[in-house]
Amino acid sequence: MKKFITIILFAFLCIGTYTAYAAKAPKQTETVTYTVNMHCQNCVNKLTDNLSFLKGVEDFKISLNKKTITIKFDPEKIQEKEFVDTIEKLGYTADKQEPKKKK
Image (cartoon, rainbow, N blue to C red):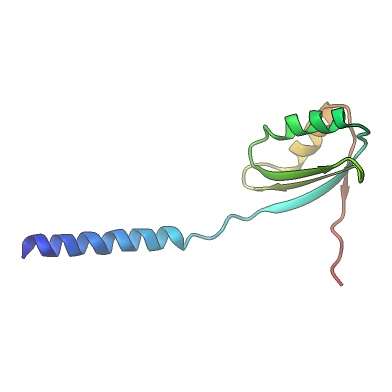
């Protein structure tokens, strides 16, 4: 009987721990877009290589046709200034685009 009660208590403890872990608030991410004065695939490759190493960057998309970089990041791990600094250290300009207003 003592073993049975111990097993039941352990099971409730495991379920409670899992429920608390699963109920954690989802990570907050932000997305910003910059216009960058890139002009060739080599520019894209250079930017890709350098942005890939920034901690806190979850995803980014580079469009050579539109000359833009859209970056999805965790603001608790990285600040926007670090993107601009990284881009400018490579010799490019980074002009932030304002988000489009939804109609």
